[in-house]
Image (cartoon, rainbow, N blue to C red; front, side):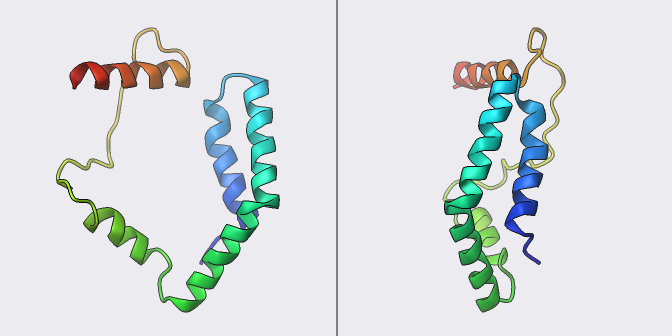
Amino acid sequence: PIPSLEASCNKYLSTVLPLLDTDEEKAATKASIEAFKAGDGAILHQHLVEYDEANANYIEHFYREIYTGYKGSNFSLNPNFIMGDIPGCDTAAKTAAALSMAALRYH
């Protein structure tokens, strides 16, 4: 079953808010979610509900597209990636920056 828009937004907030560092970032994120729910979110959710009514499984097409529509190798996919602490990275933003820099240096 498709969760309600409210439930999806609450799930998103419960996931993303702990990653934000300041009260201002958290307030801005909450405001963005409220705007999304009142605008595009409601429209997109209605389209998803209608899509679900017309199809046996609303995820199947998207799932197949992600895993079979990609033109590169799917063998490098590792959904179980686990990373330890990075020295000097005490926030999510610093960790993301360190990973980005490491990837850029690698390539």
